[in-house]
Length: 211
Image 1 (cartoon, one colour):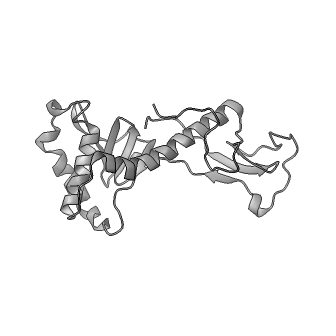
Image 2 (image 1 turned 30 degrees about the vertical axis):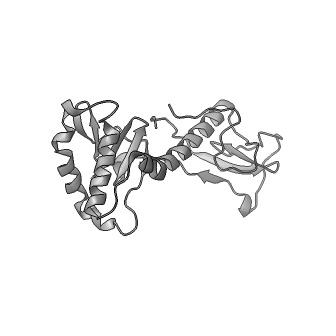
Image 3 (image 1 turned 135 degrees about the vertical axis):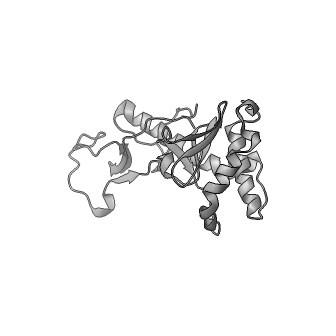
């Protein structure tokens, strides 16, 4: 998913029997213009979780766009394959969609993760001249590494479609809805969904936020 600036937190509160989303809780309701007044504990504003994370603080896989992905080591460096070969970025992935790869029962891999990643990245397959934008790219690098780790663990490999459906689609769909909601609030100052309380339902008529 393309990197986006969505730094302002989104707040959800209820008034006029409707959920309202905004960047802060206003003194007056944007719908009826009445004073918000004191609220019961169950009506207290809540913060909507931002799906974007700092990729350098994650321990596994992170995506910055739908055409660029990478694997993070335990020190926060993001390994990613480009036309210049394998890059080890210390910065530039501060707003990423993070996808956890280590499933329950696999956390013992953390001790060997950095060695596996470095050894894998030094293979001839990932030299700069081998890069092909459509067939041998950053996604190939990430998926091949994942299958390398699965093989070490004696597990079946994933094909591209399986990996996309299991890991990528759920996270990117959530991020897309969050971006759409964020943009709607930027345009009007608040957003009220038509349907009852879909936590990050996109505004009617809005297209996908992915590019």
